[in-house]
Image (spheres, rainbow over the protein chains, first blue to last red):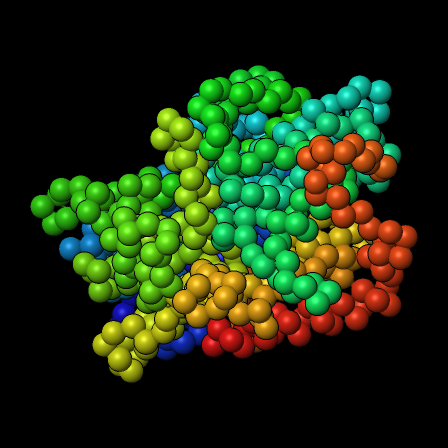
Amino acid sequence: MAKVVVLGSGFAGQTAVLNLRKSLKKEHEVIVVTPQKKFGYIPSYIWVGVARMDVADTQFDLAPVYKKTGVTYVNGLAKSIHPDENFVKVDLIDGGEDKIEYDFLINATGPKLNYEATEGLGPVHGHTVSVCTPTHAHEAGEEYLKMVEKMERGETVKMLIGTGHGMATCQGAAFEYIHNIAFDLEERGLLDKANITWLSNEQALGDFGVGGMVIGKGGYTVSGKIFAEASFMERGMKWITGAHVKKVEKGKATYITFDSSEDQVEEFDFAMLIPAFAGVPMKYIDKSGNDISGELCAPNGMLKVDADYASAGRGFDNWKKEDWPETYQTPNYGNLYAAGIAFAPPHPISKPGKSPDGTPITATPPRTGMAAAIIGHAVANSIADIVNGVSDKPTHTASMGDFGAACVASMGKSMTKGSAAVIGMYPVVPDYDKYNYGRDMDATFGDQGLAGHWLKIVLHYLFLYKMKGKFGWSLIPD
Amino acid sequence: MKVTYTPYSQLADAWMQPGAFAKFTQTCVIWQLIKFAGFNLKIIKILAKGH
């Protein structure tokens, strides 16, 4: 009887858990360890952040799902992994601790939101709101409505949206948030009372941490940057890119750029800046009790897997699709895997940059819900095949250089007047050896309109349904 | 909201203002239903390439 433990209940973890339970006989145990009591559909937090959706509509309770599907649910925070001895130490949310043994372990713990990397960033100890967690998104929505009240009184409000560190990711979420704010204000007749500015670490608007993209449009092959900038222009929003935020104080963000190491300041009344991500604060301990996290993890705390980590030193012009992991198995422990944001990428996808003083300013690789789920699914299938005796090594691969992704970036929530940008790219990691523009132009596209919003809403309900493991869930693609 | 065209400004360099017909198509239900179907077909193509 095998014990497969999954740490985390986000897109990667939940997908892995459901697929493991589906593929393994009842005699094998599937255990999920998560500090969460609810699954949160993160893509919809931006709507919570503009008070156009309740938090409750983005979540469901996990316990009943695990009970129904026959998954052992441990509501706790994994604090150390002991890979020589195959167990995890867990702090239980309701008190006490547990030691959970495993035959296979998937680290799908997602990111640590590293607000501490930027002084003054974040909603808890800082001066910016956040849409990264359900509680913070709800608070952001309340703060946003206070700004609306100010504008209704005739005041002009400065809003600053983007990334709060030179190595941040998730520019897509910030893009959605800035557009949803602009849309909501336009609907209220208040957009002319808002001074909205984008501030990010991207090489150019539309980079999104994936090196931007080129799409076919009206018989032309066009850079996505043009459409990203045009979308900002249409709403009168200005943008600053190539920026690293050094610190945030009440009402102002201090940053440096590719061009200048001198501090520049952007003032604000309301700011949402995405933090840099790191691995969750969890140690790896060997059988002698030594902390081997430094060996197993990248400097940001994310777990190294079967990627070519030496490729980072070869420089952007020499990066290849083959640098990226395929099986997500760790090199030193065959029964330890990482999926979703928890795995350490070999290097960025986007071209790295820095300020004149050497401060790195690089949009780091996003792992969207779709990518995280695809990876979680592949890892689960590999482990299931090993447990079921089909193979003694991973059988499924999911390199980001071999699969594509669709991203639907909301630009306004309304069934009749809303909009979203629908972007498809294949592959996620560009392959300039194979494709002129890095991607297959037959499967790479970008468009915008009301249909995009309909698609976004469909995905909201579809994935909440799927993640509950309801009838037919496995027929819904990741 | 009407955005003012100011030559040599950041917004002017990114100018791609939709005209009346383009604006109409962005929320025209019939046209957007066709696009919705198109988006789904394109996404299915991406999914198929990844498998």
